[in-house]
Length: 383
Image (cartoon, rainbow, N blue to C red; front, side, top):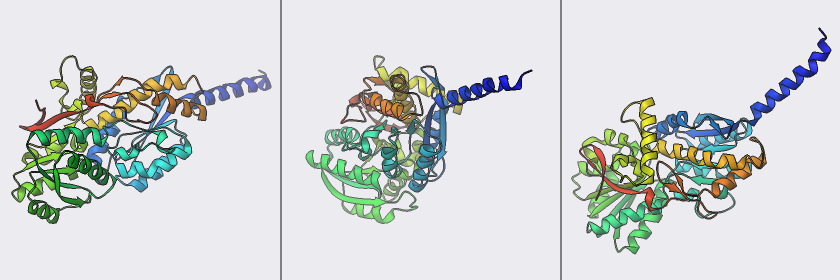
């Protein structure tokens, strides 16, 4: 046997194998599967197992990292995914502070980010950094408009505000206070708290002293229960509104009787079975719920995981277009992927229907929100 003649063949095989490995699409996922925001991050991480492993004939690899609910860790993770793993796109992170901290690195690497956070400040106003970012959760103003409309119909004349002392809470205050003023609803108190706080008694007493008709809470996950429970404990009798940051059954499990009657505008997935038969989102949402609960157990589905699933749906539509411009792993592919995402049209997801534009990297409309309440331990849509 001529070893020398075999060597070139072996070398070619190695090169071919290396090329094939490099040709697969790599998606980095950052989720807070531990820490204070784990209630939100765990379903996001879990949903990765439901995303497509092949798109347009290309294998897709998902590399999932936990930022432990810490923006500094999120930055470390995104650096690793970009420089070491050379990902073609990113999904996540779980919190708005983490997403904001990542913007510079995403833009510098020219790598598309499909973020699953709440704050619209991640994609608005559009600029050179944010043009690489797309958002699969409803923008604050879309949700706030529905909340304000409900307040008006319910005769609310004054409102107190309490929110996170971070970009999530601050952006919500900016959006909500402006819309409330425009609607003639007086903001009589404004308080903040930290995600890790164990008590908000001081803020509660100040809110109650202002005697608002309603209180709006701008928080996410488990920490959003704290101010609501504190208000009820002190005897508050007004209406209690939350953001779509609590759009999960875990919020009800954690809050129990304290969250009964909560009012919220949130994604349609949470009340999928109650949607009209002709609603295009219904079948997609029910399909996601069925797949998630088959893998993780009945009653475990979460709209936070749905945001990750919708990111996967958008990529599934965009990757075939990007492949026409270059191979995965190349700058040409990443740029074309960004462009294809920006041209997404009527992509039906679990949480809404996405139509992106150069100025709007969220692309959701009124179909992405439903006004609902907690009744007898479950979310139900309001008439």
